[in-house]
Amino acid sequence: MSPASQTARLSRSTRPAQGPSADFLVIGSGVAGLRAAIELSRHGRVIMLTKGHPLESSSIYAQGGVAVALSEEDDVAIHLTDTVKAGHGLCREEAVRVLVEEGPARIQELITWGARFDKVGGKFAFAREAAHSRSRILRARGDATGNEMVRVLMAEARRRKMIQHLGRHFTVDLVVADGRCRGALVLNEVTGARFILPAQAVILTTGGAGQVYARTTNPPNATGDGMAMAYRAGAVLEDMEFVQFHPTALYLPSSPPFLLSEAIRGEGGELRNIKGELFMHRYHPAGTLAPRDIVARAIWSEMAATRSRHVYLDVTHLDAAFIKRRFPTIYSTCLRYDIDMTEEWIPVSPSAHYMMGGVKTDMMGATSLPGLFAAGEVACSGVHGANRLASNSLLEGLVFGARAARAATADAARGAHASALLPSSRDLDAGPSAEVEDADKLRSSLRRVMWGKVGLVRTRDSLVGATGQLSRWERALNRPFTTRLALEVKNMVQVGRCMAEAALWRENSVGAHYRADFPDHRRPGWKVHSGMQQDDLPADPVHETKRPRVVSLRTGKAKPA
Ligand code: FAD
Ligand code: SIN
Image 1 (cartoon, rainbow, N blue to C red):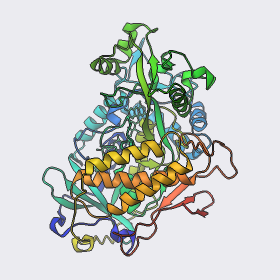
Image 2 (image 1 turned 135 degrees about the horizontal axis):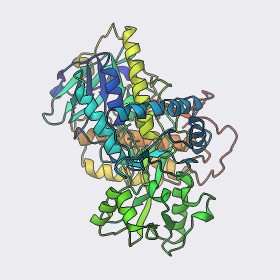
Image 3 (image 1 turned 90 degrees about the vertical axis):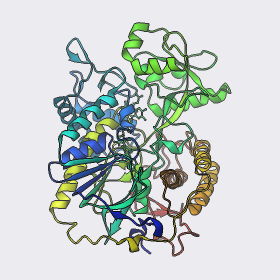
Image 4 (image 1 turned 90 degrees about the horizontal axis):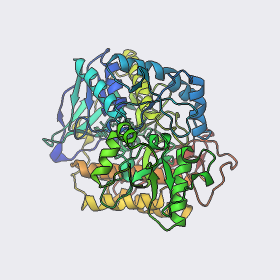
């Protein structure tokens, strides 16, 4: 059985009904999905799907801002250099060039659509963040940049009659026929109805996978669905070992790891260990503004050395009125947890934050599967390399969301989809559906395994342990499910295993990937990307799950996982 015909499987009791139809399907409504949908609406009817609440996404929580070379002291060449440097030699320079060169136009366009970025003295206020050599971060309402960008994009999307936005619609799988992605299998979360949504082209903009870790800044819906469904459909995943851990998330037993923006350090915030000592100068000349991976690992080392679960972020030396004005959301959230950040140090520790890896795309968002495009955090175009430069991802969503849409319309115009032969529900039917026994417990166990064994510091032993456990769970979950929770747990296990396999494969330390057993950066042949594609599925998919092949994408030479 080929991966294509395996991709969407339904139970007899829940055969898909006929749903709405459109020319283009966008899965996700964060910055990337919204920007793609707006572009597509010039060329045909668009359906944009969101699981859960129609506004929920990582985009809406983005705090620090959006990096763009628009200030007088900056230019795109400097933005390019900073991005490539942060990526530790693994960025695709062509992709970075696209990002920094097209970024200013995408931001100007957002401003013409009504975005209000903060100004000082009538001029845009550009902030500094770690590893940026210039002040180039635009922000809105202090620390509510993502919220402002989503507000404007959503309003623009609503003005366009060709876009139909379906909230509370969970995409279960991609529908593949004759080697081409031709739509998606969708679950209406309210009615429980499942239907196939055919389209000439599909754009995945489903965001990241932070929820596979016990500690993450990501919202609950960041479960890696797009990566898992693309993988099941036969598309190539790339650089899955590169997970960015944000250094400063609130550490309180009673609170989720709420993000404390890097911009706080950009404004002079300091890091102290639990003895109250400043420590960053011992790890990097740039101190608290060193690249994110270095700050996160420095905190990890201090926590280990002081046998503590956190360090402190200290802004008590800064003007209190300025803090309240500059970081209103962060200030009020900390107060909710009885911390007045203007008077007390804030307990913080690292948390999973961003996936550099994802569905491999070219410069136009095309994946290895015809008819499927990807943009934003779900995609890996190569802009971030081994470590993303802070505040580059909102820009990436805008730039590559628009590009993927242009490529999808060109593809559709060529008539590549013309001989569409959708699988019938009978083709997709592969036995009775089931539910995951105690899905919440499995989800929690998975998150702990990933945090403990595939986290900030990895070793061969920890990764072998993780891949063994994840493979066993994956085999047990190799069945069709009908609830969102079960489907998400299955996706999280699959994505977690891909991350663990890739991390085991890469035997050096680079950027966000740190192997304590291979601490060297420049081992021979290190400058390659990992690629991962599902082998042909075994004849008995319930009892046998093949390991994905991890290959070096530069040499193409297979290496056993
Ligand atoms: P998202 O915004 O995550 O959107 C994903 C969408 O896909 C959602 O609508 C979701 O519902 C939908 N979806 C997912 N799975 C399914 C499914 N199965 N079916 C249907 N719909 C689905 N980056 C910056 O550049 N600057 C910042 O200041 C910044 N701050 C951040 C702060 C926080 C707390 C977090 C978590 C991230 C931050 N980032 C920041 C990173 C950045 O916000 C994200 O990388 C970016 O917004 C991702 O955008 P996206 O459109 O790719 O995905
Ligand atoms: C932050 O505000 O620290 C997050 C910025 C980012 O992840 O790009």
